[in-house]
Length: 261
Image 1 (cartoon, rainbow, N blue to C red):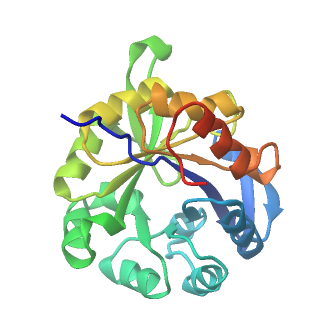
Image 2 (image 1 turned 135 degrees about the horizontal axis):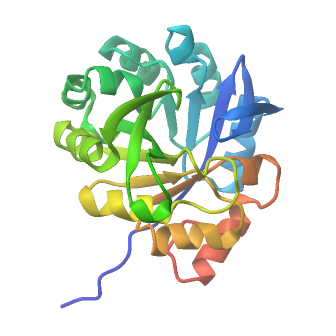
Image 3 (image 1 turned 180 degrees about the horizontal axis):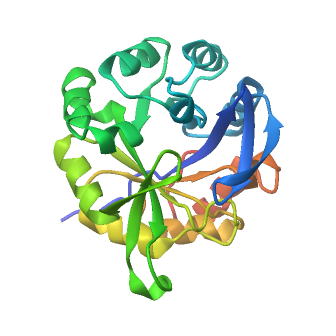
């Protein structure tokens, strides 16, 4: 029996885009301008990012899909996959963005309103192109309670849904990946919520992208070893040049975690 080789883990910068600019906040609020999305995407591609997530964070609130022109321009500037989310509510929305060059589309609020959209999208475009984004917030008590609630509308609306139950349903319907964001950890740079990550990773057999809380190099390692995730997503730590993607990957490689350098 051969030795089981751990698949390569991914490091993904996130571009939260509002009014054509990349922004970053803390706990989904207090947004600050951190640059031009196309320039940032090209920079991260050159640095060795495995993918880039482009989230039009105002699209759902404004009742529109992510801007396909911005996606088209960003795609021409990079050579790696681009995951796009924001205001996607129909198969037509997905088709427009995929035709503009997005490799995958990410749905959150629309899937909560109409779960069947996940199944329709998986049939139309393939499971591997459908990411379900879950914004999770501890619903009561301390971290020891192990209860997290799903939030919609960019973290503004509680749904009453349990995160694990929703993750399992999304997988069953056809989600190819889950982008799991801890609202409590978002922007704090105190580390990923690995209890949350591990809990969801144990429930579904599809890749989990951990989001929210990266601040130090060990946070990335811990997400893989403790959280059992397949990819790590970060924003502040890269936007403010605290660490480069190459530094993160070299650290992970030295820690025995397989990454593409």
